[in-house]
Amino acid sequence: MLCGFVIASRIYWISVVIFLFAASLAKLLSSFLDLPIQAKDDPLFGLSQRSMWRIGFVLDLVFVGMLCAAENLRNQIIAWIGALFLSYHAMIWLMQLPTVCPCLGNAAAWLGLTESAVGKLSRGFSVYMLLGGVWLWKEGRKRARTALRQAATDAKES
Image (cartoon, rainbow, N blue to C red; front, side):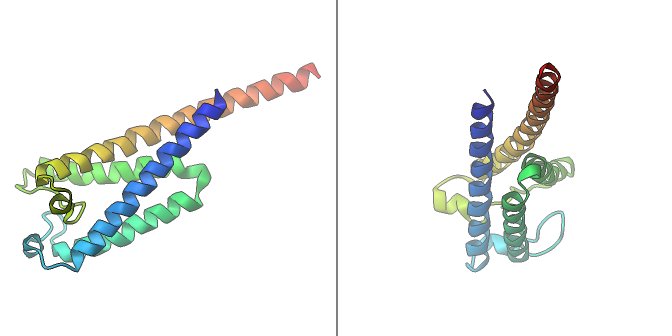
């Protein structure tokens, strides 16, 4: 049972790293292209879209580095990143800003998707990170406590 949990946790972690890395590359490539969307400023931060993509590229790589380095904190970090991303989307929604999040750079055009579909993909992956990270973190803690209790019981019986 524990082995299945470890495998599922690693698959989840790898899927998040792959998505963040792909998103960072999309942002970087988009920042060097001459795109109409770059004429717009980010609605929350007021920076140019090109600057936001470059900052996002760096942050995504920092997040990937954190996930690769901090094995014991991976699920908490993933949940935190998901919460950050969802907070950005929530603020746009709460402020009723008429914009679609260009979080994935020019991925809409490259993938043949509408901007709305890419926005839904971005929000969906943010939820995936938040809920998956929280669940795996809680489940891992529960399993660790169970293993410690079992080890204590075994030690008493010996």
